[in-house]
Image (tube, rainbow, N blue to C red; front, side, top):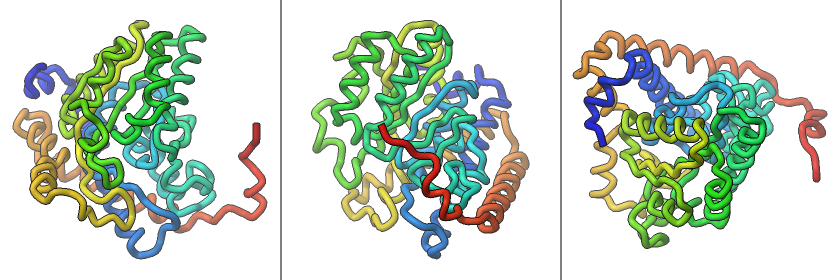
Length: 328
């Protein structure tokens, strides 16, 4: 594996800055959402992505608009990294009609087809077969687009995971399966439900590449995802990419993390992906402290505008309940 410095050296400065900006946007967006939720301004629940920003930013930096991603109940980071409007994301969390799903989906169902992200699937493991189906469509149409399935370590023990990887491997579908292994399926440590050391070790059972990277290092994620995307575009089939990471907060709204070992928690929280990327960009001469300050101020202003947009948007009319749904 190349050293991080070499990865940065081969990465265009604009691309590196764009990934950093995406990570800052995700973090600030969620910091804002967290406090608004505590203030009772948001309905429903929230599953925050704080700490996992490098995964979404590193993977999506390799994608075209026409490539498609499938997300989970922890959808904010994926949506922002794929280019879903901040206004539309925030309005959706507020349950307003201007939201990306017209206020009907909420926090666990963010998405925008035009941005290459169908609404997120909150069912654990539910997005994997959908990503494979999308990959099959790309292959059938002879398009060189790719499909991405983001999922957590908990989903790696679902039947949908194994069935989908097997099918994608046999049919050589252009799908990258991205496991965001934050070590806990809700409150259960991964070591209690899995005997192999890495989720990516399971790839060998299906005859596809399995790669494990530091999910807090955006440059490692970017490199590994880039190789998998290129392979898929060239007809080489799927890859299982495991990104070892750690959520900075609880599983969801009322989770105080009492089940996590405090030493483990301290060690992982010290490896903040935003701090790591900022240090590497500054020491590598790619970005200045002044540019960092400007990015943070610009993002703050964008999020404030998104909150204002959401607060001033109307709720869906009662008639909307009968629209945008169907039954098989």
